[in-house]
Amino acid sequence: MPSKLLFLPGASGNTRFWLPVANLLTYPAEKVYLKWPGLGSTPLDPKVNSIHDLVDLVVAEIDQPVALIAQSMGCVMAIQATLEKLDLVTHLVLAVTSGGMDLESFGAQDWRPLILAANPSFPRWLSEYDEDLTPQFHKIKVPSLLLWGDADPISPVSVGQRLAALLPHAKLHIVSGGDHNLAMSDAKEVALLIDTHLAKST
Figure 1 (cartoon, rainbow, N blue to C red):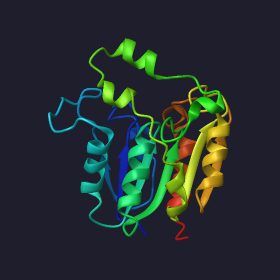
Figure 2: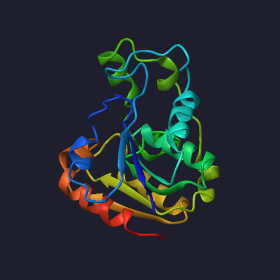
Figure 3: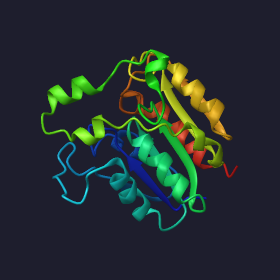
């Protein structure tokens, strides 16, 4: 069972994104909120110049049994970190992932132009990331909770359904009316789902 919960924000780098959910969780574990250098209010770090550098930041925090709880592009880092630390990641929670798969084939709205327009300093290496991680999903055998909303144009429900089919031990939950920020807008429902998920050992 996890003794630490690692919360990973999406491309916005909003370190407070998961707080509404985290504050409602009853599962007894240390809570750590990851920061992405150069995103949101977190200063640039000259040593961070790629998605893989962000993955390294996550891996460095996996020093005991952990659950990774990620949103949108943060799911990319969570998946890759899990593949590197299969022995220590006990649970995954992936909400509305927007990377690591060919989302265009699902009719997903491209989030990049909007975030680049709103954040001129946004690192281009993140917006240009398009690696396909699906061939490796079968290696991830930890219990995985997939959270999707049926009103999210950035990551449609069909993306979650595909992910559920590729991950060996995944359960998809669809939040009615949920959009790309469902973890904030539907925090009570999401927290209950995560608490139940973390209590499962298989």
